Length: 244
Image (cartoon, rainbow, N blue to C red; front, side, top):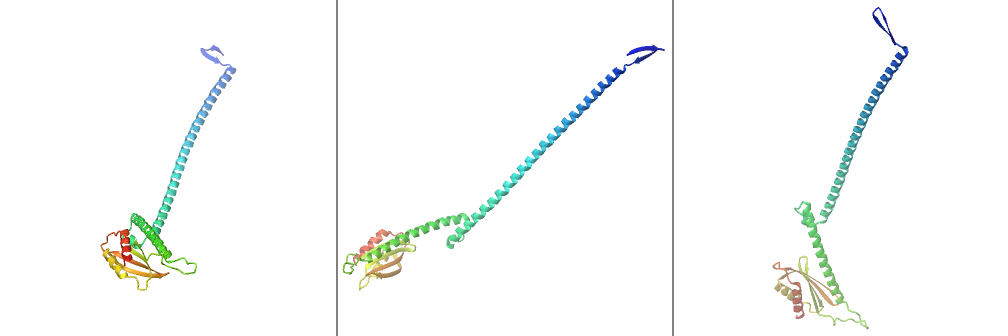
């Protein structure tokens, strides 16, 4: 570049090579600026996408958690409904096994459970009493059966004339008397009088005969609803009958 002065005017002459180099520098600067803007835009777009992706993942996780909670809630409700139905069926089955008088006027489940326990205990006591009576009757039956002698004859001479067993029955006191069968009969009236003196009223009396022995089953009730000493009563009756 050089200067020339003509008519007081300054004229700048520029070298074309320098101008070309300046243009290249300017283009490079513009290109760098454009690339920087593009890079910044790309970075901002990437950040926005990441934020959107993160927000989407969070929303998806929230939706999944909400759906899982709803599913667990539905399953719990169904299981609870099934459990209640099964319990209702069990209570109905238990109630059907109880006597009507045991649950009359009682509607709550706790009352039914309490009555069921009482009923089971009553049945256990009755079973035990029946087992005792069975064993006693078997004993009487065995005592009336005599082994045959060599000549085929049988004898009751070795057996006691009377046996007395006293039990507490469902409706009072039960007396079982096994005696040798006699032509003159057994003095039941005297036994009834003795029972009355012991505080017992005779309700019924049933007799059977087998193998030359008679079995009397006397059902009695206590006069004053007092608890009778069964062992004492049994000993008293045995002594009384054997003295007849």
